[in-house]
Image (tube, rainbow, N blue to C red; front, side, top):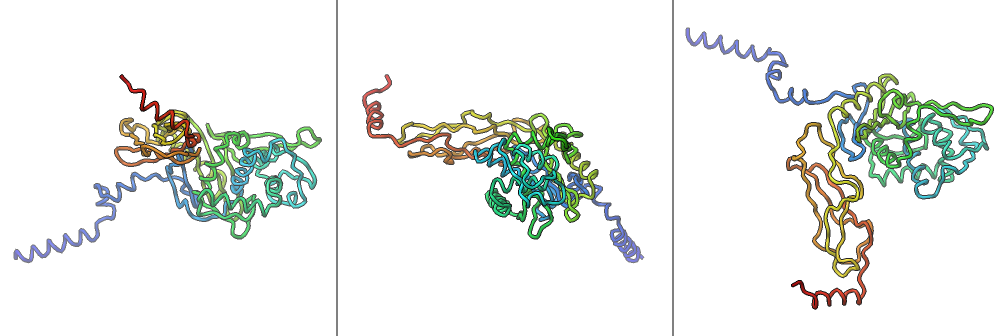
Length: 399
């Protein structure tokens, strides 16, 4: 009898476990449920998305961020980057006149309706690219910089390699549908970060409305295709995109309290969802994260002795403000740093030469690191300098 009761009880226990609700264990502290509860659900309708801090490049959130997809007019971020780079190097001026070719004015899709032979300044064409997403304006700039669009596209792909991007290949400068033309949310975020190093670009990407041909009989009214620059506090760029293949895309940036964010979404179903989901990404990051400064630009981090050099030591200074992205509420004492550099170097030392690095830790774990470079040349000392230095050590001793 006892054996029979034990058998019935054991069978009931097996059945109970067999038909126990799948969530039953997890709701009582199962590890998988706790992980899921900690995950943030952003950009739910996007095929691919990423959210980063522009200053440090820290990824805050990503969803299939390396998936290769058609980028549509977000392609123009690279076109603007190469334009700003040419201006920075003195190869191009904002006031330079650009004459539209027959080919440039033949572009379909979004355009500023350039006529063959029509002249506009680089400044005006940048407005046409950044605000109206002008395919014709993009080609006109490309031809001005490289001679032909084909040569410019080669420059675009060369820049992709230079930046170390693995998910991108361009076939044109404007994003019109083409074979072998693709990118990823991650790569677009990195391109956007490079573009934002040119502070003047947000004058174009952050303007909501402007005019071209203002003094003509038919002024052309520009309205930014990125509505967030008007309706989201702190938003000032960067670029929208749409084709039937790519769907609705956006690379957006916003800045508040010194924190600049970049959000990229690809393959959204419509503009309303696209803008709403990017806004939610920004809201999350601004509410949860802050930049923690380590060193201000110009501050001395350490010194390295230089042997046989015109200068006997080299100061290692922060070339820019060094900060790390941390969760709000993080104890400042949990952030520490360590300088890793040689005690001495032999001259000559060249400006820009990597000397060492600053490693930043949070609770003992490496968080990020900053390269430290020589701010100036240190030439090899001549025999007279070496003689005087040696003599001073021989004949002048502290009392």
